[in-house]
Image (cartoon, rainbow, N blue to C red; front, side, top):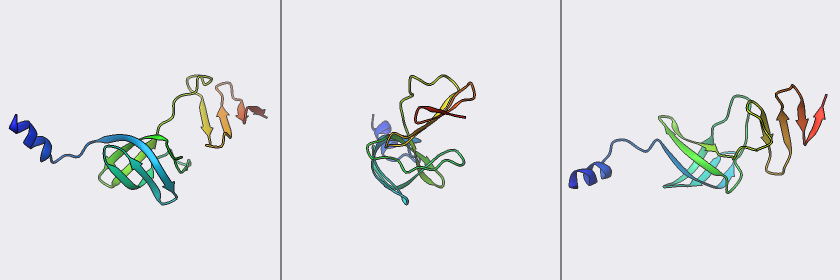
Length: 111
């Protein structure tokens, strides 16, 4: 038993990720309350997509050799089909790329 306690307390490896909530965000990073508290955590996003995570968003903090990063977590929308993409702001604005080639902006088809 003392061996497992010693290894846990003196592990050379940090956790690979931690789940938590975004407490606050600015352009300089977010404060995340997870198993630890993380400050100045930058958000990961695909190339060309930028966002500042909304407060109270569920998130995963990922540890890398270049620092900590967060991934905002959002439940999938049931109206989307596999392969479709939706961008949504906290204020409710949305852009949906449909599988049939249509683009919906705030629910309206754009030609």
